[in-house]
Image (cartoon, rainbow, N blue to C red; front, top):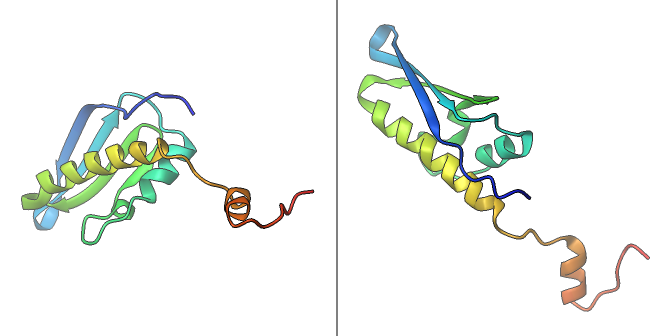
Length: 109
């Protein structure tokens, strides 16, 4: 896997909606791959905002929130990005590794 690193936010746009809500768009320096988007959505969270509350496509991250929570949501988006790229650095074990550790024969002979 390439050591590309977490993409930086190069622009941001906030639009006021009715009811005291804001629609926010963060534009990243590069396009995210399908695997990077998958890892973003896989980051666990206990309370709002959760990763599934954001919409990712290409190099754009979109979300809408209340005006007073705007800073919290932007920070959460950055945290999810960092955590999803940190998850890429961990080595994933396969079922073969588990079987070998347990002393069981390989399934692929």
